[in-house]
Image: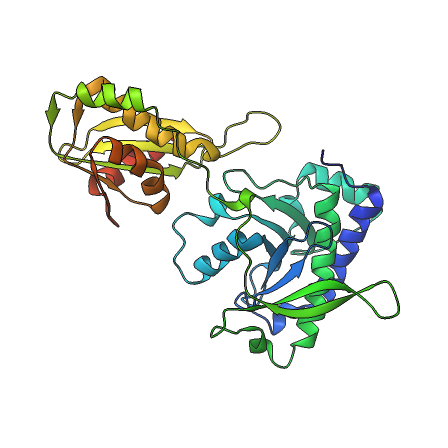
Amino acid sequence: MSTAPTAQQWKELYLAAERYKEAAIWRWMTNGHLFGVRDPASGEIGYCCVFGNGGEMFGLAVYMGTEGLRTIVDMLAGELDEDPMFSQRCLLFSLDDRAELDPSEHKRIKQLGLSYRGKKSWPTFRLHEPGYMPWPELTAAQVVYFAQALEQAVQVGQAYQTNPDGLIDDERDIFLVREIRPSEEGGHVWHDAWQAPESPSEAERPAAAMPLDELRIVKAFKGVRTRGGVWEADSFYVAMPIQEGERPFYPKMTLIVDQSTGQILKFALSKGVEAAAAAAENLLKLVEEQRMLPHELWVGSEAAGDALLPLAEALKLELLWSPELPALSEARAAMEQRFS
């Protein structure tokens, strides 16, 4: 069970943020100078992205695990499929205006006896997780690690002040990682290690698709009366936060559209972790209800393809990936406008 941070742990995080602000390593480092800090408690590597070089937003984002690293690398390359607001998994520290703070942060700063003045001077800490709104409440483990990451970011930034590009090794695809090791004198000290990204953990892997109900699929397939045309299908986050429990989340919408008519054949909302199963379930329901199958099913993303491929194969339905889904794009725009 996650424990809440103590007042002292929060204070150490705020003080680490102050030291990071004073070091201002963004003066010579850009968001492309990535490096890692291994969490001594969990062993997970957080990949640090320094921002502020453009003079607009100042702080540090720590992208957790190999999937987090993939997100920031794809984002920098302009190859990210989804809006980072919905897909990134990171701890984000930024210097903001007072009005941008959550009420809980105002209260915490006052209780800790801290004070800040001026624009872009108020520290905010947010947890970003795929499908959820940014969250200001961190666990004790996250607060402790975040403080360590900020401290090590200052160390790395100062060590590479004259040659920040020394952090980039594209040829070997390895990254500088700061990690704790035992020292000869006893105790532990932080060391540099150049490492390739580790294999994604179980927690980082995409959600599984719906388990196939073979008897149900056989019955649906036998019930098909007509076959023709093309259907387009995809799943995507909708910027319509839903409050269910303590933390609001962004739902994922699954759409299936007839390409020739533009008619929405099926749509559903689900939590992001349930989207793969929801996409397959809605495709199967559509076949059962309409008693028809298209000649081809076009999908617009790798995630949608992975979710629907087992069912498509069982239904003897050809599935094709397409960078453009004309009918679905129009239907998506209409649905997003409606839900906004």
